[in-house]
Image 1 (cartoon, rainbow, N blue to C red):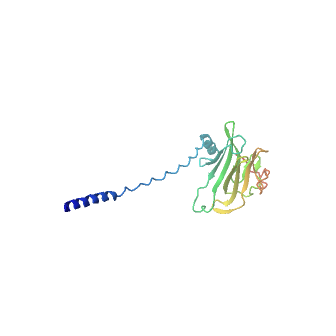
Image 2: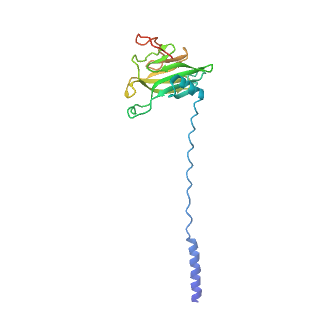
Length: 204
């Protein structure tokens, strides 16, 4: 009889032990990686070559395409000043020179230049500082209807953050060229044939 009771207890223990067997730990699935941002399209070779011809090999193409919404291909290229401890406090992109060129019959033709002054084929843009400008802070805006607008802030020196108000530049559909805007950024200003009474070269 004692043997039967012991056998029964052993059987009961084995049954209860089966119920206490720990379940395998559930593995959490790793979150799916975020999709990579699409790579920016490479600048076409003819655009890069045109920019280098106008500004040299140390040139950055900032924008290209139908910038003026006039049905013609244009590019905006600049000599960008690298960030250093001296100029790191100046926000935005700092440049020494910039050009906008337009493709006419397969040839890139310069139609706007920013160096010591702002100018196009007709002369110096209204609102350009009389004194030579060593560097500019450049900002751009693209309107679906009006096209590219530039906002160029003259700097007293590349390492000097002091500056005046930005000068707006946009394509004028009436005159078919880039011209500066008044302080409301609504009306175009006429060019000046010379700066401070001294003739200077306009577009190269």
